[in-house]
Each structure stands twice: as C-alpha cells, then as structure tokens.
Length: 71
Image 1: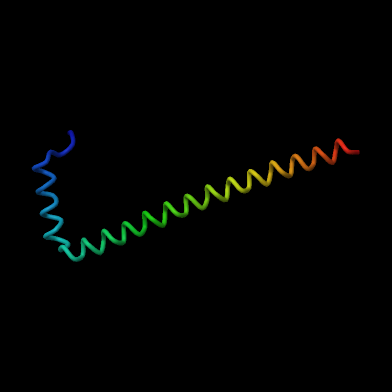
Image 2: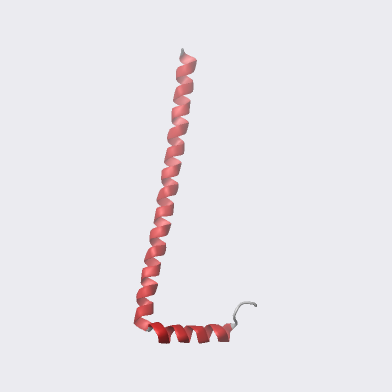
C-alpha cells in the first residue's frame, strides 16, 4: 500500500475540517508551531550547554597538565 494520492489527501483534509472546524484547526496549528519552537530552542540550549561543558573540561585538563609539569 503506497502513499495516498492528491485526491485522497483532499478528501482527508475536507473530513478533518468538517470534524474539527476551521477555528479549532487554526488554534491547533498555532499550538503545534509553539511546541516546535520550544523544542528547537531547548535543543539549541542543550547544544550550547554541552559545548560549554566540553570547553570547561578541556581547560581543566590543560590546567592539570600544566600543574603536573611544573612540579
């Protein structure tokens, strides 16, 4: 069973609009967009935090090596 064609997609869209209504779909789309933005922001923050932690670890290792060689 393959992907639905254009006619099937239009029929599905009409049924969804009839069941949920246009205003409710608009609100649902806005909520979904906000959720996606939040997810992307949290992924970006996690990536930045991970990069900061790696940089701190590298600095810490270099500092330890310099202390060992100075003894």
